[in-house]
Image 1 (cartoon, one colour):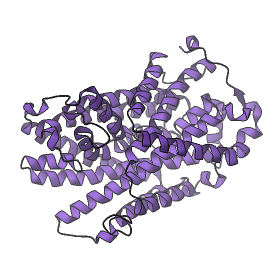
Image 2 (image 1 turned 180 degrees about the vertical axis):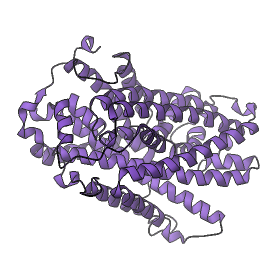
Image 3 (image 1 turned 90 degrees about the vertical axis):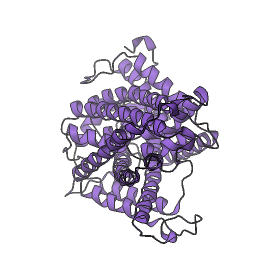
Image 4 (image 1 turned 30 degrees about the vertical axis):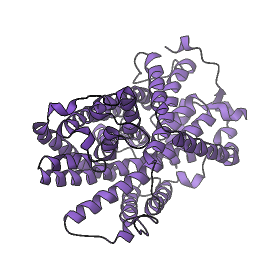
Length: 484
């Protein structure tokens, strides 16, 4: 079992990615990567979850106008993690994100657990987002007088549903796009990002004139508990920025462009989120915020009904781009794990014409489409959040480990103020995990146990590290004083 704790050297990881037949096309620029990041971040969280976060639900109190602080807290945790991601992405510019970074620092077993939870993050998020996309599309069509049969827009057991057909079709359509090429997907995402940014700025510009400062009092109606619980919920609104690092192997200049894209996309989105939260809670008393369509209904409440329709259209665009990037993220994690021998080798096959991991893309798309069509996700946001926060915690810890074990490794971007930034990042992520409900923790535990069984049953015996012991090493104990 000592094999499970051996690391893969940074040089070996990079040489593996450069070796045929696994090489991907490097076509993405810093602008493309930033657009992918914004495309992943702005979507379901800002258009849907802000309502629940502000008002609360049966399992958690709402933040009220203190939602502004909730966004700042979640954003700060993500910025701390992003600084750690940026160092890894500049040092190890290959596909796999947190999985690959853990492999280089924490050992194969923790890398597997990280990758397995990234599958949870991206997979469940894709299902939830596609179902949300379907709901917004149905709403827009109904505004136009087009009513689809309820049997074809709901999963079994919900309003007489048979299959959520719009959710299935959007996933399959985007899967086809991703098979053709990530550059083409990036172009589509860039256009969609422009549309939804325009819609968000429209809401801010128009809504600012309807703000009543009296609605901001009381600012924290449920105290810090409400703000903390809301921060754990709307963390979902930030999920996806790490997907930028999964495409590092397809970036033209990953050492420079990936860190830029990570920080830029997160900074832009955090600023927009804080302003949207302030405007939203200023337009409508927090107790009257519409839970399912908070932003659109806020404009309706002040008589700007055409604005509500415009925001709904922007929500569809926003959710589409989130779905694209989440699919890319899961596909690239499958690709990286397969290339290391921890998953079946056909998952890392690259299409001879398009230069994309087409087998992993098709398997991911079909799986997500099937679940989206026939499953109703109740705790999707919480389950996605805990998998992501776990991965972020390990990445922050991995920075400390790699600074200790490979101090001379070239780092085009260095996380500032080590060890304090990684330590604060770990504490912030664990603090947000604390606010997640017990049922989410149990589901996370079950998922992790299934992952361990799969690793022991397949990955451990098929790992490529088992065939090249000399290229890896056992981790020495970490002395925090050496992590500088």
